[in-house]
Each structure stands twice: as structure tokens, then as C-alpha cells.
Length: 183
Image (tube, rainbow, N blue to C red; front, side, top):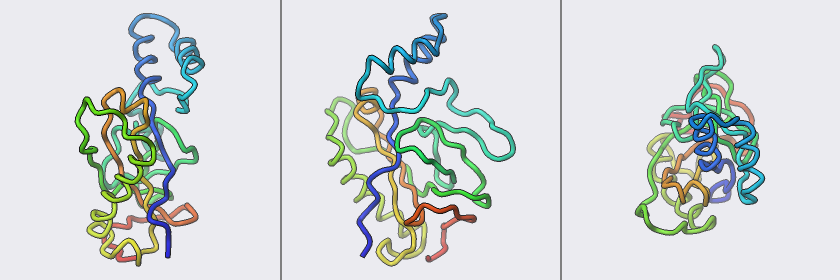
């Protein structure tokens, strides 16, 4: 029996993005400001900040903020925490496919529930739409679930979004969509 869910893929840290954008607005050197912010925040594990939420990267795909991922987006990622991914056509090689996006039920003033609780919540909430999207139960499917959840830092900035993705167990590239595949 496969594990309930893969518990790691992506965490996002909006604090560096916000600092980067603020530096650009104030006229400070954004790279220097982002570097200083990264060294001041020991818990931040984000990739280099991106000034734009979406920026075209040619015909191979479109760089997209993880905050802008939508159902049907396909992408690959090799880091556990990042801010952007290159979304490609699902007909192109990719590792992950977004099949459900929703907000955590916690209100805006509630404290971060903790990594284990947020992952458990995502585990539970991502399974029901999985069956609707793929066309068979999670336990019988070849696909594994990986969720993109808020980090402590992004939660503190108001992020409640959870992105449910699917992938093969060994995270090898696939082509085509898993939607309705009944695999």
C-alpha cells in the first residue's frame, strides 16, 4: 500500500518576494535587499525571489508564481521550496500536474497550525478531488499526490492556498494529462 501522500515538494516564502518588490519600489538595489533579507531570516528557505508573478520563458513554457498555479497546469520542480515553476503544456514532458486548488479553512487571524497539521489537512482535502480528476481512487491509482502548502512565513502574510498536484512515485517525466486517465 502506498503512503497516504508525499509530504514534501514545495513551500513558498512570500516575505522575500515582498521585500524584493519593496526594494524595487523604494529604489534600493533589489539583489542587495533580497540578500540582506535572506541572511536576516534564518527560517527562510525560498529560492531566489522573482520580481514578476509570470514571465514568459520562451516556447518551452511560462515561468509562473506558485501562487498563480491553476488546475490543469503541468510543471517540473527539483527543489523542495521555491517561488516559481515553469508551466508547460501537459503534452510536453513534466513531473507534476495541478488537479485542485483551494484555501485552508482557517481564518485570516488564526495562527499557523504547524507543518504536520497543515500537511495532514492537505493530505485529507486533496484525496477527494483526486478521484474526480483521475477517475479512480487514490489507493488504486499509479499517481501519487504532492501538495503545495503555505509555509510559516507565507501564512503570516495571509497565504492559505493549498495546491494539489499528482505525479508518479519516482517523479519521472510524463507526457499527457492524468485527467480522466483512470490510471
